[in-house]
Length: 184
Image (cartoon, rainbow, N blue to C red):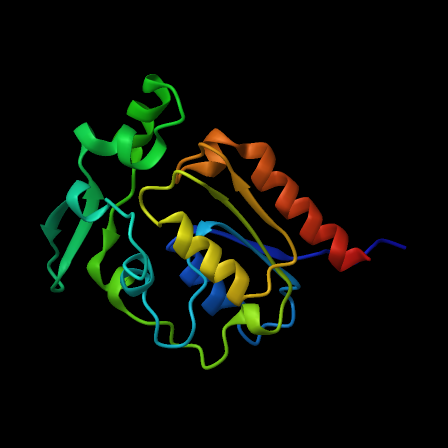
């Protein structure tokens, strides 16, 4: 007899918006992990949450490009990427990350959470983030973790927004803790 699979959604950055929405009302998802990620209330956007506390320098690092469907998409300027996104990884890895980054649409950052009840209201959630995150201020990440009644928060001293790359053990530990809690 095999064990039932444990489904834990892990979101990074605006992916926290996506996982919060996707897990809302979904009984298959048993826990959430926010890795330097947004954990919104209904109607809150990534843009709103990132500006709630001082410390984000992301706006000044972005390049905008118009999209055919209207609005813009953004990417971090290559010459600002290392400092802005992943200051705690070596220059070679940062250059690769900058070259392979995926743009994000303006709409993804400005649309509020559509779910009437965010998944973190009903599912155990854990958080891992860097104390030196320049994209989502640590104060905002702490606020969201406290508001979600985090079952465990790892704030890594000196870690950047790219915590999964620079501090993978902290993120993996949060995921394993979530799995362990679900399995009881």
